[in-house]
Length: 357
Image (cartoon, rainbow, N blue to C red):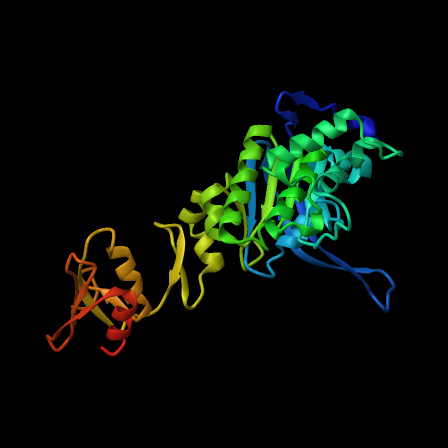
């Protein structure tokens, strides 16, 4: 397949954009290792029979426990690993029959590998994304510069443009690398753990940014991540690799309701709560206590008590062996199993006191 198969870009007032999509048919991913005896590759499949679709205009997240094969799948989708079987289509084009130059115009990749930007500025680092369009000379035209400036604005990094890329924080550099990917004017963007080095606010900001870019620009965005709770709140679609190497696909709510999320991640001391979409400690309560507290305090109180092995009475469990009340002045009144009342201030003093019950 030649470069002429790449359709021309459609420019808008906001910047370049083009609809696309990623589809796999019977895909098998894994590794080929040379056999010392036979001198030929021995295959080790990690995931097989994958019929997946990531649609344009949607953020698709790839989830699964460590070692489930997420990175192997992502690296196969972007062409770094050859598939062991099946097909991958990007924007309708077969990946195996697409030239590297044409592929670079359809697909952008942001991996977890640390990038050494040398002496490049943030603008110059983002400008590397234009190389699939610049030809042999590598010289940027006015249109190329416009695409770079748009990509920096799109990720909220225009104020970083003239700063040395080596001096950027992890969060700032991740935004610039995302801008570099957007500067390619791709149909599909694949990102492997883009929030791995970021603090919580930056993780949320980048994940929401990727979803908004998918919707606003008609991009197909696929992200591998360990930020399970955030992904389930933000993503349009989920590919979930479970412990049996099966891949479940659907909306986050579909996979929560089917039990696939709990089945993939529940452990001895950790359980997924479908109602809240969050994980909590899973342990047997040693006793139950009655609780009398306002609605805004009750969830915090339950969590603090659960940490000390105490359950809230009245939910089909054992009878109460004590009571915790809120006196309206940010003070807690504990009534122990012996009937003695103890005033405590704050949750730290509360947990230290009930620990001896």
